[in-house]
Amino acid sequence: MNWQEPVIDYCERLDGRFWAEPLNAFSNAAFLVAAAAAYSLLRRRGQGDAPAAALIVVTAAVGCGSFIFHTVATRGAMLLDVIPIAVFIYGYFLLALTRFFGMALLPAAAVTLGFAGASFLVDAHIAGLNGSVAYLPALAALVCFSALLRDRRPETAKGLAAAAATFLVSLTFRTIDRDICAFVPSGAHFLWHLLNACVLWLLLRTAILAKAD
Image (tube, rainbow, N blue to C red; front, side, top):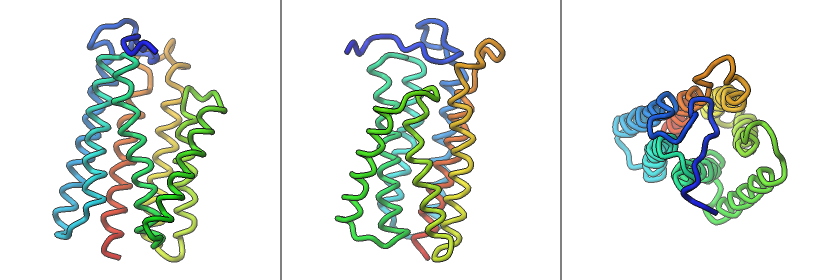
């Protein structure tokens, strides 16, 4: 694979210029805001929470990596976008199993690996939705976790449900981006960034508050 190959996949980007995607690039600041808000909440709670702190760092990395991808726009830069997202998804999945469901670390890690493998198979064998299929397992996990926790941890369930609902809307904007270029030249991908930052904030807030339950 040519890691320097340009990636022109979004309505905003018409060429290889660094600032060809201003909305897609600068909307990533929302992830930094989400990380800062989560860190502020963590400090106010006044308790150590290494897993949540690590995911806050990953959230900031999502914003930085996506900014680089939407400016440099090469196959190599794409890795800086997709890797932090994957780390957050599977890291949060593991944290959810241990913190929300009380699973021991080793079996929780095994289940997380199984989920990662299933997610890879879904992405590899199901096409369409402008690449958004890859995120459907994460959405399904949020919905399932929320349903399973509805009685035993209602506040946690509400937080996960709010994140799932917001994620569904953000996925919709990501999916329609290419289809609306003729009508909306800026596209809708930047809304995916803004709403996804809200999703990560909701997830981080839910995890931080659940530690004290």
